[in-house]
View 1 (cartoon, one colour):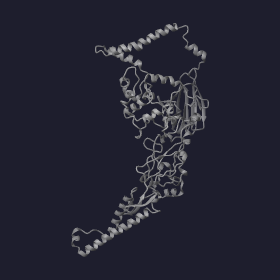
View 2 (cartoon, rainbow, N blue to C red; view 1 turned 60 degrees about the vertical axis):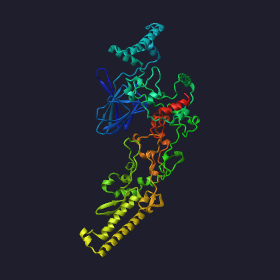
View 3 (spheres, rainbow, N blue to C red; view 1 turned 30 degrees about the vertical axis):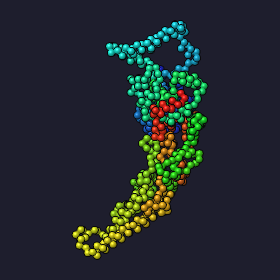
Length: 605
């Protein structure tokens, strides 16, 4: 597949000229930088604005870089798959872009046309000529007084007068409407979408006129919001003010404004999404040199993901028999080994010839699910959100190859239950008892014949019944010994078997599979399965011969893409890319009003 780009220019008189360029590859970059494949010369276009990738003969993917947006059929998007025959219109700055199949060879045609005037580039003299009022405006001092008076009347006097008049029940409806209209002039900007229901109820937040919004006002609605950490600890971790922050901090202290209010991070009236902060500096202020201010912390200093972030410390299982189950966080620098109670070599399942031969023996309908060899996706599936991997279940993911069948009778295959040895014994006892009873006693006579049997016949029947129970117990014990033996089916995966017994059964070590190795971060697998990225790109399962291996990638693997020092090829990554401030973990303390007031009363402001 190739890509053909055609620039269309309309000449005076209606004549159209086309400048084509052909690229022998599947993707092209679009932007204002001269090294982009498609050069779009306008200041409204980013240097590396977007990337177009042909996915198939009839589909392409459009991806905007960084914080840029692209308008597709009137909607602003960052990423979208577009059908080449859909007739979709793409807008990047003043350029209109259309996609279509180029020919019957699977090529893609990109048509680009400048539909708006380009942004004019002016020099300094042009700017001075355009923006100066010299020779046309009144005297500066007179203009200043006129404007000041106008502002005081329109934006101060009128709102105050109309506000109090609106409270008078005899005030005409027009005055009440004007009061509401003039109040709008005091708004700093539109409300966040999450607070849209408060747009007409200013007093929900602004309880007292001309005072900042208090934390109590926020907590009246967000009473169950969990805070980042213990309030006392956060106050201790706050850095001292330096440089330009000293004067504003002194003013806040003089006005009794707390240092760490909800409003210190959450700025309202900044548009639909402005209330959620994304500036990494808000995190770095405390987490850089944190150990010097808060000596009790066990956290490592962090200031930048690409240059100063500790190696990942996954939560791994060291003792699968611990109750309740527990994990320990160990840095990957120490090459930790996990003991989850399971024997599972990834390399054997992914490439071993014996596994491939085993797949060939499966029924056709079962083998169709796997193909010629096993792949990661055959066992590992993401949850509905695409974030975490669903837990492995023996019956669903393993039983096709590792059968638990122990007998077949009446064209029915008998399988052992998985996971509980006592249940295994019960199933075996029921099976062998029924088998021995049928063999020794045959069909049970009817009640009349039972009563007519002689005492000797009844005694013989009881001896046969006792023999049936003895044979069933013998067969059960032999099968139990074989199942849990060194070569038994259980020992293939459960290598750690305690010699202690429970009702005559071996005690298997519990299996504790970790579902979330980084509990203090959020990661979405679906977002990363793009381009040439595969599971093995990050997880070296093909070379892992033991379930003790922790197949978490190191931070170096993540920095290959998430590295702000790598120029335009890097993905913009801040703290909130992976972490949440108001964590929902139940171990995180609640930001209760009482706890916050207690912390603020004993801390600095």
